[in-house]
Figure 1 (cartoon, rainbow, N blue to C red):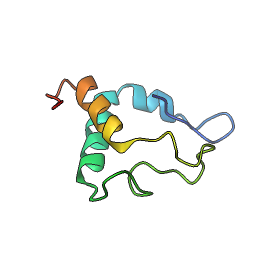
Figure 2: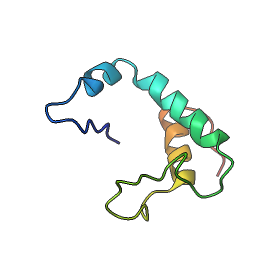
Figure 3: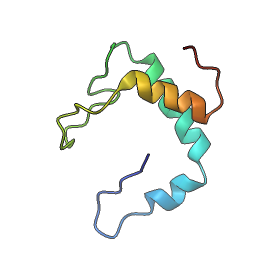
Amino acid sequence: MFVHDGHPGGVGLTREAFGKLETMLERTLEMLSSCPCEDGCPSCVHSPQCGNANRTLNKRLAIRLLKQLLEVPVQP
């Protein structure tokens, strides 16, 4: 998992995010879980800048990983 700051030299996003990691993970889980799409869409996991045409992005796996990181019970 990474936070990408696309500006040369950065704008301080990672430094700010480090102290708010749990909140960021919780909000990301909420966003993914509430998106009505089934497999991922531009509103939740797809990126127009993905060099792999979003083939490696997986909404269900992202939700599972976030739940594990946040110690939320995960259904098999």
